[in-house]
Length: 320
Image 1: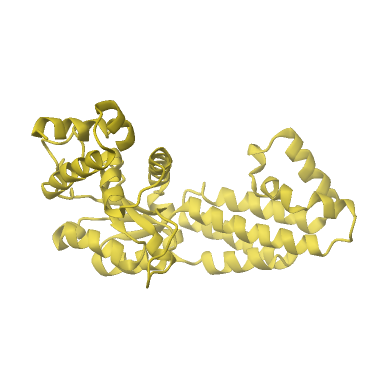
Image 2 (image 1 turned 90 degrees about the vertical axis):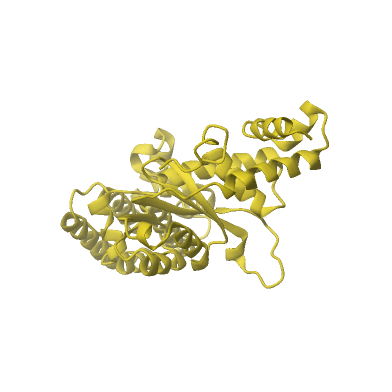
């Protein structure tokens, strides 16, 4: 195969799947895969991770089956995004501490000292890696992951309240699991029908009514302009959860309200929302390709679609 043809195949795979390219060009699918991977590996050899000051770290579910000696964390890829350029700058295998360590080692000690903020979820491995490799960086827990964890606690308290209701009662029917998303949705995002459902159960159940107030108050915490205001609102949520005996919400807020990585949000106001958007693109890639067996190739494709390993940057693999 000529060099020109190989580059053409690689460029076509930027916009469609290897299978579609093989059919378009009447070339064996495995050949297209091997050629595309070879070109991407050559681009990777000339790629230098750009210097960054703010990054977002998130994981994406990559495969289902575990290999011998693996655990659930090995089924993911760790995706690092530059918050300023909104580009993927590296992809590591797994979501353990070593996955993020790999990125920092590639970046180098001096470049790591330039990083000022890292947005991530509450994964312990990521926090440990940032603490060791980026001593000047501030770790900020992502607000959307925190809201998701709060919703999990809220749902557990809903289920406990459901068990306390009499069988065949109207309150029990309104608290059933099929309605759980209505309870978790912010009031201003509900439909009129869903709001009528909430109003009906709040009239019958005082605890659910107070949990609704706590939920709305917790969402407003992230609108605070200062750490002090946020701490005050969290103290109110803490006291209300204690008063109403919402055990799961109480434990969540108790463990969160004094955490430095949570309070850092009100200084930097950064999230992993860019990573979440990129994760949707990655899921679309998986869906179009019916999954990937080669995880290294999958990581290269992410860097091609969402980063710098593509024809647009081929002449300048390091934008800095």
